[in-house]
Image 1 (cartoon, rainbow, N blue to C red):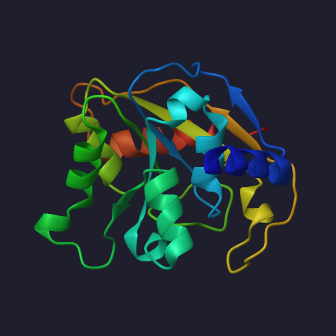
Image 2 (cartoon, one colour; image 1 turned 30 degrees about the vertical axis):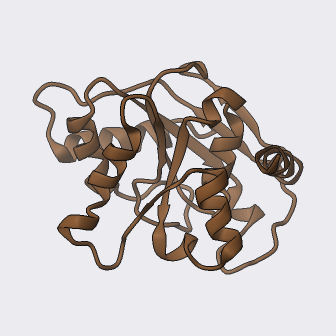
Length: 200
């Protein structure tokens, strides 16, 4: 019930339309990676999936933010089944990469934001290395670029109340780490794959 209310609210606020340009929403294990400008980003991608895929697609989010307060904790654990990762005091036992690969298991997909945090500009900044390490550890998983447009205007950084605004979400073609591809090469190719999905 909560997930239906949230997806309805997102559609009402953002009028978001999903454009599946490079693939279709099918039941396949994937890692959706996107530009990050708003706290609504993960929710918008999650809400754009068919209900059956939503149940097995888990946003990756910062533990220090989503563990604050009962509402955030409820949403993170009971609704999104989010993978909460440490970003301040990372130790071998709280390695985000381990948390993500274990959470995926053999069936679940992830939504991640490889810039490492929300940014202000429309063009994605350099991606963190975690995406490359996931691609090395999960060679059979599809890595799907997603470009989110206008979300930063719906819920600007520092604002608590969203402003209704028309937004879009464009999903690109799957990519994988190629044989011999370097870390910088893969990360830049992934970043370009997201940026190239923007509306001209």
